[in-house]
Length: 336
Image 1 (spheres, rainbow, N blue to C red):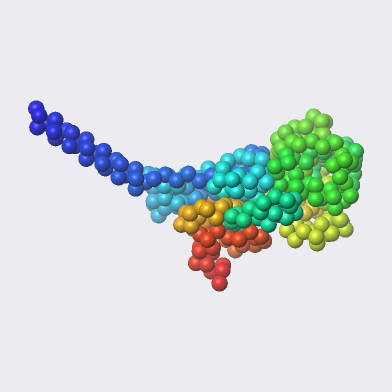
Image 2 (image 1 turned 60 degrees about the vertical axis):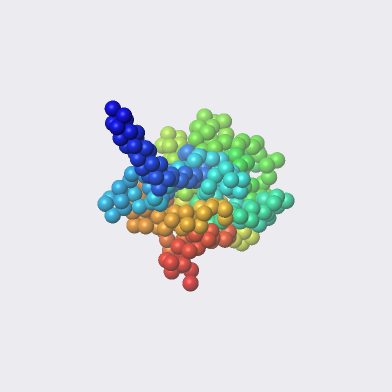
């Protein structure tokens, strides 16, 4: 009986050692990606990227049709208030990474522009440029708003102060001679702004997002809306003053009832992290982002996924690359 107990105990000890060794060998690493409101573009794109770079313990191997992400990594897309919120969260260590507009990130890194007077976020680092974001100015058909100047005296949502939309909306209004004192300011995000327009509680709202953005798609299917052009000399002066802005169109038919191209300005959406993040981890994440399986996930995961391309991964970066990401891009031949 004693011999049997000894054998059983020895077996349990061996199993315990094996379990601890296995758990140690497969230490799970969690990695967060700050995105934006759930009805905007950052959140669904973040979900696609999180899926692409993850490879939980027990996953099938990449060449067997399994995950091609970083071994034992579980990444998650986290809804947030947007660009400003995300760079602040990265700087404070609240999140591992996040998406932000190129202008917001540059100002945060340098302590200039809208971040003037605040300590520069000198440890902010780039992983990749993702896609252009188009600035939408959405108005109700009966609002009488046909240009940015027509916002005066109207009820306008600029999004929340922690968002990149809020930053750019104010820059655009300034370029057209409109201030917050000239309008009735609301601070509503995606679905809330769309619902307020639907119910006649506001006349217009700004959105900075890749098209098509869900909140506007849903709104246009039930309500007649217009996209207000952001164009002319004022827009030209804006893009000339701020190099991160560019001019482009939102194509006709992107939203129901909009039959013409709408000229507007764009800003780049980019992915950032902290210099404190492990070099090997960020190297693996960058490599996983650009593998062939991720290409398939991006192409089918979201309309904007198709324009997230390796050849434009370094376009318009105003913040230095993370050392791990830089190593990958050198291996890929993008950095000589």
